[in-house]
Image 1 (tube, rainbow, N blue to C red):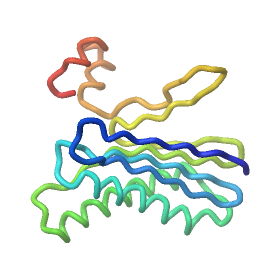
Image 2: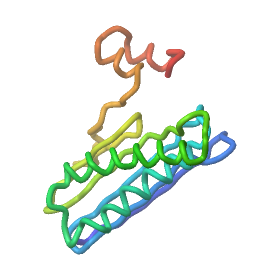
Image 3: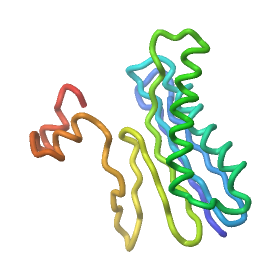
Image 4: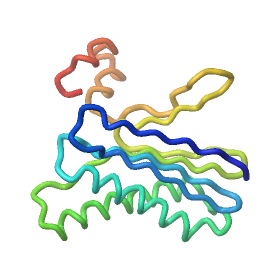
Amino acid sequence: MKFTIYQASRQGGRKNNQDRVAYSYSREALLMVVADGMGGHMHGEIAAQIAVQTLTDQFQKMAKPRLDDPMAFLADTTTQAHYAINDYAVDQDLLEIPHTTCVAAVVQDNMAYWAHVGDSRLYLFSDGSLIARTEDHTAVAQLVREGIISEEDAGHHPER
């Protein structure tokens, strides 16, 4: 499998960068992961690191040289990452569990499989166009999907 990876992350006006990007590959499969620690919560950068580390570690163990079931892998490992973040909070006696978003994709057998949590997004670039492949897991996005508020109102919503 041939591929090229490019990654960029900007801190913006924030005190620290809570973005984490990782990838891992075998002869027949590729995993790409982006996690973005949630800034309104303590230790978001650690939650993001735990998420990408959990997914890449499991990929390296299981993709020999391919995953038996990429969708099950994504579901299981995102759940494992969730529990690993919770365990970290307990071990460190944190008052609040750290939060992160995460989007992960596996490319194998000329197919792409993905899973996401929160508002990190996956886009497909095809024929010169970007196509959104995920919908945000947020309260505001749910209000838009239900037709309660408009896309325009969502940009100014206090819970955004």
